Image (cartoon, rainbow over all chains, first blue to last red; front, side, top):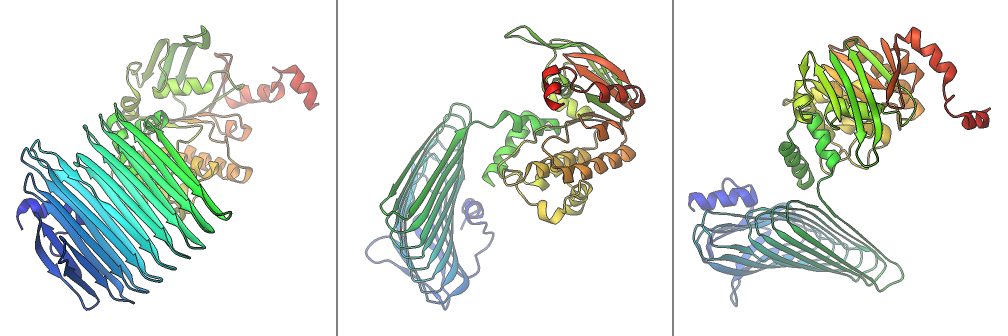
Length: 305
Length: 240
């Protein structure tokens, strides 16, 4: 693995060396390293690019890292990763993709991740996206995530895209069984002429399940963001979706909530707020001695923290 | 020392004079401004901090003309300002704000000390976000802790008692009494509270955009207490 790829790995997975536990590192469309443990197996798919990650029932306090790095300009990479999480397992999964594009051609990674959580399984899933490179070639990431949360299971998904991705369309869908919980927290910052689209769709099918989908974003320069969140309450359940965006310069942000209650005991809430940084926040920090620009940075850093 | 020379402020839209030719010198340790609501007190405070630009007049800090300095420059020259309505943020913690206010990297112990000074149990608050989850009284105390952390040579407090419950208020008085003992510069406090006015070296009464009275608390306070609310006859009749 070269220096560029190592930098990308640090950005997306905070990895300085090979991680502890199970991992699968994909670099420029090929396998660059893999480790399995007694409880976590990683198997290459035979019918299409990608891997199956199989976590045994009852696995506790283990982690799986599956970062992807692209440093070859013009490469279009597509993978299917399926996660099978056994009953009562409690694990952390760190995914993410970093693109370094120094050429003129578009580099693209499309990852399709499917999660199958068995009864009472608990997963914390962290996904970071990052792009860099001095070339004019576009850096494109289109992640698709499909989540099946079994009875009493819990999945928390944290997605972060802070820098350097020219275009992203994120599609996330989920279905929840009885007593299941899905928590999604998204953080996005776009600048230049970047485009970021997020589409969430959650079906709450089991009694007593709950879902919370929240997005915090900052749109700078001429970037465009679109956030769509669909929650269908098909059983006694509670659903919450929230979009909170700071808009700057000539950026555009759209928030499209869609709540459907198909059951009398479905309780669904949507909150959305889009606006520029409040003037009084800037003034407050300036009275502490910060310049307007420094104040702006502090407010955005805090907002996306 | 802060000096205001012929400060006037007019709202352009309807030619309304908010402040009319204010002349003022402050070099005492603790000065209180009081007077009826809408009289121009908060505007005066904002003009000193650079948040509002006066229509005419000059502001001098230790003899230096700071009239054309912006908010940041004035803050760096030593003006501190505690808002009447503390500003809320998303994601910024109490610790972040106190660190920014102190202007340097401070340890958690030091940050906690500032909170302890305003009667907040530091471990409960230091990592809290400064957002809607905090009550008005809590926000107000954090606002005051920030000004203590700044240690500016000229600090303005705009109605620190506003929005604070009675229990918190008693503690607040204590905070200002302590601050009076420790301060290395001047405090200018806008207040309606007799107990705050009682610890002031000088009291300035601002009404209808003018300074109507200036003097020591012995000179000003008795008159104020007798004539309070006299401006509104109907209100007084209702109260009696």
